[in-house]
Image (cartoon, rainbow, N blue to C red):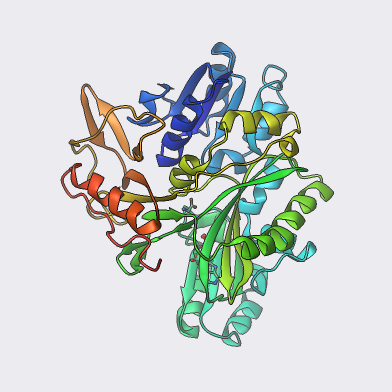
Length: 427
Ligand code: AMP
Ligand code: GLY
């Protein structure tokens, strides 16, 4: 099969690494990709929301499947675009329709969906400009901390956890009146704070059948000990000790089954990955958010742990045969540590030369260096983003996996390099 992967992060490098191992994969294109993806496929420079450019690439290169990495093209309707054009409709798009992608694209939509299907989540209310005054009252009477969420996509910055009513009222005004996130904050969800430990669970579905393809714990804060500003993710571990069989059984019965059934009942087409961000609150799982894609850096631990041929799974999604496959996991623990540019998540420099990077990596290696924000300039690899690399390693337990990843990072250097040395600290 000829495959096109859309995106340019560590997630897409891990996908390219995994897809390249499939006997079903003939050609692999990654758009726009990074210096790492070019080791496994051909990078094509285009914008992932330029659907016409993607269309002509698919037609001229005889693409048979498009795997969409980030949420933006999905929320903007790439699935429907392919379905509605005669020259594209035989191409499989891995991702949800725009309707179903609202699970990520609109917090208000996803909260209502969970309510309709009795899926455990934090209590909430939604407000907009017309209900601003009652929103202020709702906040003033709310227990603390209180969580404010911009309804739409806000590049991971739309969630504010407020410790005081004053702070919450201020954030509410910024969002609704001052339009801090533009259209994305014209509606705001106000919800109860859930105390617990977070877990990311990944499901592959055709909208009827599903398989759990892995889970991971993500470390979002920039500083060690989970301190400082939020980032896209500074590291991940999998499997997570508290996600044992009994807990995952609850996740499946109370969350995954009603979610997939809900999609089916509401005729929301979905052929792709569901990323369920949940909170383990006293042993009970509650949904914090849905994402309509794989996570980054979660993919950099999920793909190495997954023993199945990924393309075989995706073909099973296309032909509604997921139930005929068994998911198999590597028994070892996997950790990834993300190396970022100095200054991230604030301002940082790009174009810095990188040293010590390994070449293309065989599938049986126990350390894998996935590129995120990198690009080739002539023979050099230079930094090209905040999150630069995700270094993944296997170990007999989480500690040894993290240790191996840290050791591998010692051989890599670029000016300003920073990474957390305490990923997996609580295990
Ligand atoms: P999101 O943008 O929805 O991923 O939210 C960002 C982060 O905010 C989550 O990963 C959680 O750490 C935190 N968060 C969101 N909602 C809640 C909640 N109701 N209770 C506690 N933490 C939350
Ligand atoms: N690591 C969190 C995300 O991909 O949204």
